[in-house]
Length: 59
Image (cartoon, rainbow, N blue to C red; front, side, top):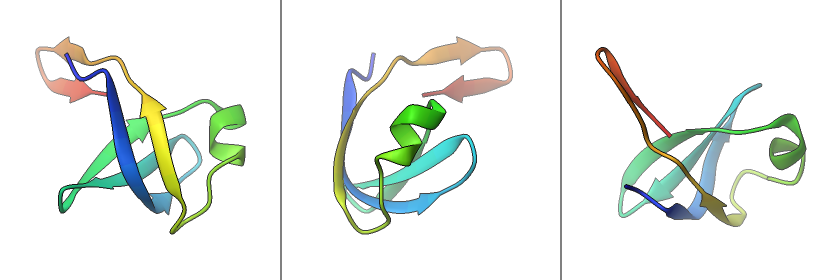
């Protein structure tokens, strides 16, 4: 399980934030409330839940 990710916000989309973790961009699905508080370039720490499906791994 991935409990959280932390690092600078690399990009924002309507339902997703990309957090740079050790040189890798982790796409994390977020609520609109959480996304409203994030800014590109700002440090962030997001609690996560890993959802495992047959065709995807989603944070």
